[in-house]
Image 1: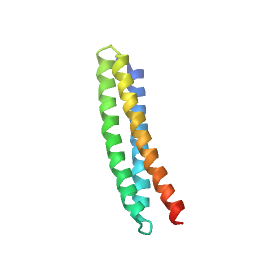
Image 2: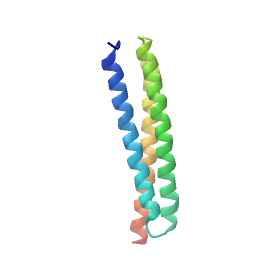
Image 3: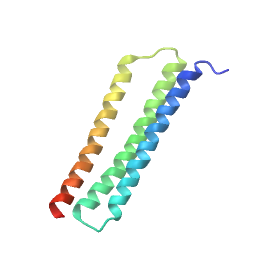
Image 4: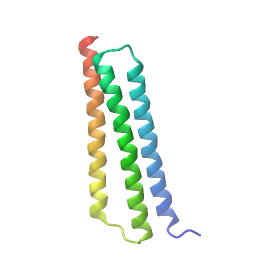
Length: 109
């Protein structure tokens, strides 16, 4: 039996949820890029794809940090808080990108 299996599986579920989110965001970026060309489409689509790639990197880093903490039987609340603040900042950037894109559609539409 794997020691602390419940914590490891919870960590993996969280990681996979972030990966699914990043794939959805990248797909939305590709969709925006394929719309009839406007200046907003190009930068917004590329921004979403690049931000989703950064989200995958951050999710991988978070997963590895949490795994080491679980294996070492020490959960450092301070580092966990910093990781969550980074995720919040990334999501704010993603939402800002979508907002600016939609604002551009309203102005040109």
